[in-house]
Image 1 (cartoon, helix red, strand yellow):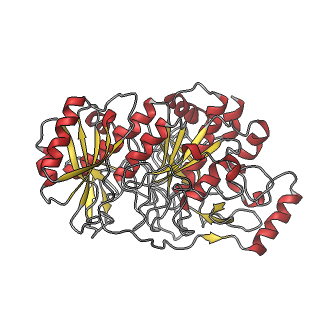
Image 2 (image 1 turned 120 degrees about the vertical axis):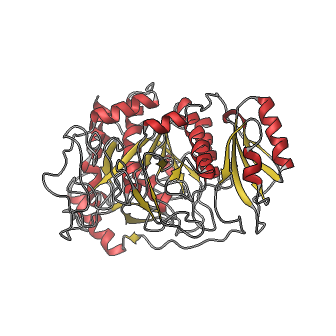
Image 3 (image 1 turned 90 degrees about the vertical axis):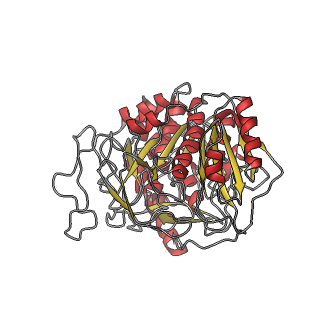
Length: 510
């Protein structure tokens, strides 16, 4: 994932359950959701909180609610009228309760637990950067293997899903764009520049899209997550560095990470989904969870409002033809269990340990209806030790890397090699890395079947996936002698791999 602490930013995702679908049955079906912005800038007052206010979508109701917001001491920062989502700032401690009582408001709540404050950058820790000496070794091995990118010998993940062979048949269409909703993308990287779509890129921090030149780029080199993800999807086959799963498609960057703490707040993600949909993006990759809650419980008004707002936005994107792909998470949680312990939320203030039911408390956006949920595998094809899982939750699996599964490659590194800012390369592991592999295969499918809807693309991903059975014996991902997870299901569909590991070669042949 992006600007994420190690506990989570390697992505979190989960499935869609009937109870969630039912509770979100009122979502709008509008055809346009362009935001109406005010002159308000991001608040910096010590007591100011950000809110999402979700309303009916008729003009009269929205106009009335906007007046009520002002009367309650709130300022509308962005108004996505067609999906009925308003982004609001207010220093009134009673604003949430007051606005929820207003006629026409269907849900409303704070999008964080700590007040907004002036922004500054923070470090998230270094990726495992490929050294010059190691790069030379890999390049030599790649050259000996025949036509390939200089660092491709270390890309075991491409071979695992047949992406190297797929590129010889169809590298993907320039008419297909995958938007990386993340920490920003360094479009100046020579492996990304040939395929980058600036016209479909933006900075959505604060809930309003900034499309000025370079606004989508990472704040610093430490915000490398989005650039790594972008390279996994669409690094060009240009004789430089690495190759992506779909090296012929376009890739865009929509930055949603807060410059102060690197978190992905709801209003930013709402903006990103709507922007992607309105700018013709076919696929979005979401290697994160919406902060500040790992799981958003529907009996809490603030968390319910977050689920509602983000779901309206991603559903809007689906209706406009966008397939949303998301990572399942790195907590090794069973999302089909009766209870999970969440000791990390809220992550913008002081976390409180709580027990949640993942059928009632949702990881957003990964558990939202229609989103493709992805688990991670290592070079041996087994579940990565960290990957979250769950029967009926995981749709498909893909290489995400695993430091305990060692490949027969020049660097013997079980993680995923991809692009980093400032023309560098490095290794990361996580379901954050699995999701872009699926997004890349989906882009190949869209290239092969240009008229396929998001639902049809998801069906093809599942149909063409290589069925992977549960382990024959106890699962011990880190080799410490302790059973780490239990796989439920059969060979065709199970909790570790869903319908199986995606297949890039089938995507361009069928």
